[in-house]
Amino acid sequence: MENRVIITCAVTGSIHTPTMSPHLPYTPDDIADQAVAAAEAGASILHLHARNPKTGQPTPDPDVFMQFLPKIRQRCDAVINITTGGSSLMTLEQRLAAPLQIKPEMASLNMGSMNFGLFPLKERYDNWQFEWEEKLLDATKSTVFQNTFNDIEEIFESLGSGCGTRFEFECYDVGHIQTLAFYLRRGLIKEPLFVQFVLGVLGGIDASPQSLMHMKATADRLLGTQYRFSVLAAGKMQIPLATIGAILGGNVRVGLEDSLLISKDQLAVSNAEQVQKIRRIVEELGYQVATPDEARSMLQLKGAAEVAL
Image (tube, rainbow, N blue to C red; front, top):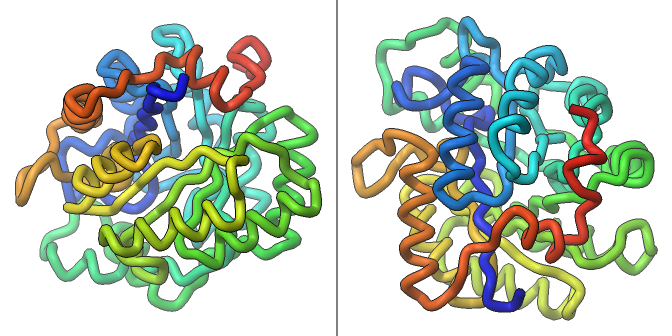
């Protein structure tokens, strides 16, 4: 398994809005179709958010999740990974509603509270498709994404211990790695940890090779051999930093949640296009792309049969 690279695809997220790309999926059918196509292209993990089917606005509603998750499960064997992040405008109760109902194999977990600044994105657009888009971006200038120690421990208890879900630990800065190491020492989480280095979000560490190396050095020092890492870089640095991550022995994450581009100033036409590109790079570097079952084995997941779908 040491030569295997797990590709995660973050299909839609809650950062980008419909005005920014006509290719961003937000109806249940589009999310399902793009997720399945990404899996067929080589993604073994699908990181999923839900959106209002009429407006594309991020929603934590479990009923909306259930409009596309069963379709994905019926059509492919990829690991379903449900966000516990949602957006900074959602409460913890709202963010946990869908994962606690569905009990997925994996869920994302932001390892701390942070300023999550999306507001600079609005400077690039003049005419908005929906009224909520500009308002949501503006709101990130005055709100904090909250995941306190109590919040994190509640997620460990209710979703981890209670549902057998393992986590994609999203670390937006080195302080988040410190928090992860604290809980590992306390025995609240067990190896192997799947640590997602998140670079390029305003309020977190920047998307640069130097920052990636600093994140990895910190994780190596604090987590030792008890973790596997993956690299997520926002915007134009998505593919370059994912490539460096693979060279360093890590895994990779792509998808329209993290970047709308396929190359400089060119919009990706689908999630699958990004997966295909990083797969070509990974294989040309001499690695093999992990299948869903190989990813399950590497991360010690409970299996698709234990998910409430």
